[in-house]
Amino acid sequence: MWDNIVPDNFIEEEILKDLKSGRAKEVITRCPPEPSGYWHIGHCKAWIIDFETAKKFGGYTNLRMDDTNPTKEDGDFANSYVNDLEWLGYTPKNVIYASEAYFEDIYKIAEDMIRDGKAYVCELSAEEVSQTRGTLSEPGIESPYRNRSVEENLKLFHDMRDGKFEDGKATLRAKIDMAHPNMNIRDPVMYRVMRATHYKTGDKWCIYPMYDFAHPMEDALEGVTYSLCDISFEDHRPLYDWFIANGWKGEYPPRQIEFSKLNLENVLLGKRYLKKLVNEGKVMGWDDPRYLTIVGMRRRGYTAEAIKEFIKSLGLSKCDSTIPFNALEYYIRADLNMKATRAMAVLDPLKVVITNYSGSEEIEIANNPNVENAGSHTSRFSNTIYIDADDFSLNPPPKYNRLVRGGMVRLKGAYIIRCNDVVYKDDGSIDHLVCEYLPNTKSGNDTSGIKVKGTIHFVSQDNCTEVTIRNFKNLIKDEYLDPSKALADGVDVDELLTPDSLTETTALVENYLLSAKPEDKFQFMRKGYYTLDKDSTADHLIFNNTISLKDGYKPQ
Image 1 (cartoon, rainbow, N blue to C red):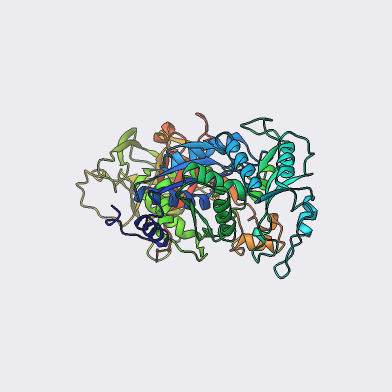
Image 2 (image 1 turned 30 degrees about the vertical axis):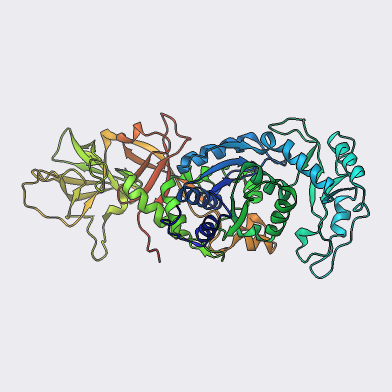
């Protein structure tokens, strides 16, 4: 049944071998986030791999909240993951909360491991455990509590659950090998005493399983066949396998396979630092458009389809590499080019008075010339309009095809105009241009035979609204290509930040945009891609500058 599947990467090759050999009978994957923060683009890579891999082999993916640490977790984060997956275009077969579904079973597995002589209750403090763990070149020292009897360990473990130990006074540890070269294997902690109210189970538990123990047990209990995770978990795989071999009694044990992490130049993804900037008010929240959290990218105007295409374009390997940020932007721009509605917006208005025209008339603007049946919308032309200031020059450079004194240019969807004069303010700056329109030159119905080299956009005074534009620079300074390394080297996170990475300006847009809804995406003609922000009100529209129109980057 698997003969028609052609693997595209090393993970699919390994899975295909397992299926053909009978080691696995189906492909079930899972997203196992800890609900302690918002997902970012690095998580997107993992979830895309999970869902796309399972789909290719006719399997499915669960969303499982690995909520084993009540001091960090919150139901709002868990809810956001469901919404994020929906936005990405994925529907998990099941949404599971480990705290509700598996805590009792994991506890019973721990009891069985005690009975099998594979776990013991240790009363060393966290500091003492750390001191006895050894180093990379020296073995650890066995706990003085390591050789307690099964009966004593079971009693003490029950006492832990019953609240008879204070926080930090006892742990359940796996009995493995204190001399193992992989320090993760040196009698790791499986349970700790922790009195904290859990967002799902309240105060039902005062002991909680550690991630390294809960993670493989949850996979096994859930029937997951492949735990696909990034390369940072590679050193933990021997422990994952040990817990499966010594704690799980069922068929078809899950298998962990790692892939490289997604690293982008000048992008900060560390949850701890993102949280710090949020708490200190240095950004607008977890959905700040400068963040590459999913909620931030969505608010900025990035599309789920573009993110998925970008990640798929990178392929899969075990070798970490750092990707230039404009590689992501290439896919955002390409997708928006096909989806964004065209509209006219003047970012730096210059008034133009057309002396030989009176009144006002409708013009048609194509919504997206790249898409068949995208339709059009109505704008207006009148005797007073605004153009962008950089579309007029008193001293034009070579090959300047826009408006000059005595020159002509076409207005998008409207007429050809000629600039006859320039009126100045008292301070010497330009107040407005005096122009005339050329009859019989209306776009789509031009019978004049007059040819001009340039076409510019505009808004009519009787059909425009002032809006706020939020402009963004990269949150991280250009010199810090690898923010994580800089932070590890002791650079303060505030030093990484680009000054004035968010600025606001005003612009005039055609009234067609008054009906826009948050997250609606537009190409402001000849300027860039913009998305209506959620802070907008009926009386005050705010547009996020999503991305520029062009960039020199081309995918390899």
